Image (tube, helix red, strand yellow):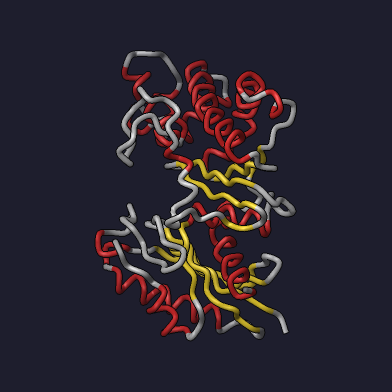
Length: 320
């Protein structure tokens, strides 16, 4: 009989649910707005309904539920800590007991960026790698680490916060309270902020026109679009972010010596534009024995990376 996992990815904007087989095939999926403003109980009720609806379509054995959440999360208990886009009532809450009672299935919950590593390792670019790092570069920067084929959680379950390594001790203040974080200097949000700062200083660029004349509407997508058309300021901004991103990549290479660093998230859609600068920085700054081979690849799973990571989490725990 075929084996399946129920997977859910609960974000601040959208909640997605899928039925996933053991090789990462999605046979049925459901997506809806999270509507976090309606309260935790309403969100959890809709999540359970969606999981039951998706599970009803299968004819095989469901091993359990993997839950990806946009929050620092204790992987043992599923307790969430200060989720930035869900609301205060989610702090110190674990969704596991409610879903386990409702679905009569075991439930495991882990941070979404961390599960990106598990998804790519099980079903994507990291297949066959014993040691790899996943980095998601989007609104912020997060990630996950696989060591000897297993997800590395750290002493308290919060391992993999790679976006908050300091790459410039004199850099800007980050939302986490640290200064000069990789996230504050290389994320999509950082790219937009730096672009707006440069435009406010009066630098000429097509960026303002592309943003409808409103500097405040210049975002990472607009900068990438302008860079592809050859706009000088946009090209320099993309290079600046690539240099910053390379600092993080080099640190990860030195610390973990991974076979592969997989990059996902919105900024990864323009990875080809960033790679020449990243590669040049690695050749210039990495320790000698790391040079000559670029262990960087683009995510193969795209927007489904955390959803499939949640399925991989369920399969891995059910096998233990």
